[in-house]
Image (cartoon, rainbow, N blue to C red; front, side, top):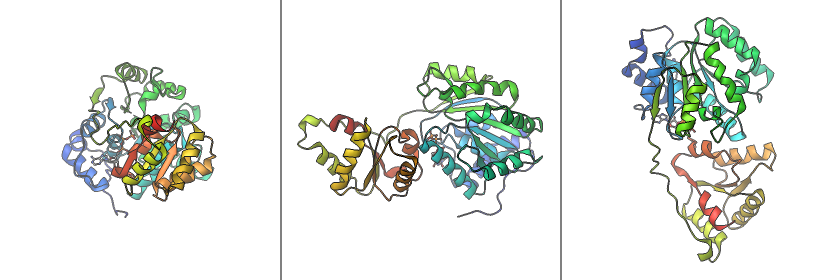
Length: 348
Ligand SMILES: Nc1ncnc2c1ncn2[C@@H]1O[C@H](COP(=O)(O)OP(=O)(O)OP(=O)(O)O)[C@@H](O)[C@H]1O
C-alpha cells in the first residue's frame, strides 16, 4: 500500500536536527514501519550524516541497506549507491530494492545496461536538472568509471547535492577478496574527484586483510569502523552419511517434504546433477526446477520468478543461483531452507 505525503526532509537542518536519534527513528518508522534500528545501523547512519566515513561489516541480511536509505531521507540531495550487478539474481535484487522504495514513495532509481534508453534518458535528464528529484541512485562500478558519468557526478557535487557515496559489497575492491572485481578498483578515484563527500563501505565478508585493503583503496579518512557479530542462530548444519542411506534421493525428497510448505535451494557442483536431481524430485511430487549457467536468461529468470512467488518450492542449482542475495530475500524470510551440504555429501 502506498503512503501519501511523506515527510522527506527538504530543508537543511542543523547537524543535531539531522542526526538526532529521535528524528531518525521517526523516519525509520514512517517509511519502513520498523520500531527501531538494529545493531550498528544507527551508528553508521549518524556517522555518515555528520560527514564521517564509515566502514560497516554486517552479516548478510542484517540490514546494511538501511544505513544509506535513511540518510537519503534525512537530508536533501542524492545518495549514490555503487553496487555490483554481476549475475541475474543480484540485478533482480537491485531492481526489487528500487521498486520497493518507489512503492514507499521514495525517489529511487538505478542505472544499468538492462534498461531501455527512454528510461535511462529520463533519469539523466533529472540528474542534469538543477534540482534532481532522485534521492537514491543505484549505479554499477563500471558506470562510475566512465568519463561522462563522472563529469555528471562532479556537477551534482559542485552544486552541493551529493550527500553520500555508499559502496555495497565493498570487499569486491580488494584483490585479496574472493569476489575481486577490477571495475571496483577504479572507485579509488571517488575520494579525489569528489572530496568531502562521506563514503560508506558496506560488506558482509571482509577478513582483516581485506578490511584494511578496502579502507585504504577507498581512501577512507578516520572512518568509523563498525563490526557486528556473525553468529546466525537460525542457521545450522546437519551432516548425513550417504553410505548409511538406503536411497539418498528418497532421503532428500523426504527431508524436503518434512519441511512442508517452505521453499528451499539444493546446491550441486555440476549442471547435469542439477538437471538429474530436479527430474528425480519432480517425479517424487516436489515442485522444483533446475537453475544453472547452462540455461538461457529467459529460463533462469522464470525459475527465479516462480521460486520467489512460491509457484515452485525448490530450486536445484549451482552457485550461479545468487547464493548470498537469495538467502536474505525479504520475500523468503523465515520460510527458507538451504540444503547445500546435504547434497554435496549425499548425491554427488
Ligand atoms: N531496523 C530494522 N528492523 C527490522 N527490519 C529491518 C531493519 N533494517 C532492515 N531491516 C530489514 O532487513 C532485511 C534485510 O535488509 P538488507 O537487505 O538491507 O540486508 P543486507 O545486510 O543489505 O543484506 P545483503 O548482505 O544481502 O546486502 C530487509 O527486509 C530490511 O527491510
